[in-house]
Image (cartoon, rainbow, N blue to C red; front, side, top):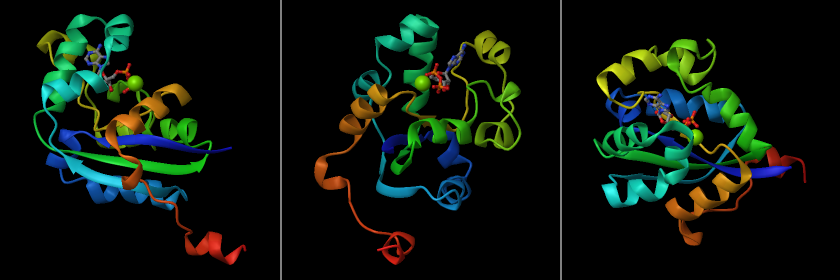
Length: 163
Ligand code: ADP
Ligand code: MG
């Protein structure tokens, strides 16, 4: 099934100048960029992205720390399209904790922070990338970050050649 998913390069990815290398991985895998923009969001917007669902799953302290982290610099919002893109992009991004994320994943290759370290410091885990976790999340997050006019349908040369 062709799906669209939301990826955010969080402030640490931008500040570490990793935009090109991370985007390259998605393009190399055949995913199509259908929307992209840089935004420096405020806390009000951050609360719409990191909803009460985070509190339920991770606790109030994590949500508070996340909201503080995501506003520390600009974020690159990317809408990617591809076959089973939601699950596939999550695989490429890796599991939440960098310390245990598999090598070969974005988090596993570029970061090494642990839950223990982040929790002791009362900070959010710096793991470079957000990726929608389910169809429902993707739908809500794409609608939050992009207007209809900011999302584009076009053919890559690979698709055009198969016509
Ligand atoms: P994911 O980003 O892998 O989907 P979650 O949606 O559960 O993970 O959490 C959102 C973000 O919150 C994570 O990417 C990470 O930055 C941060 N986070 C999650 N759990 C913790 C924790 N125990 N301590 C600090 N930060 C956390
Ligand atoms: Mg998540």
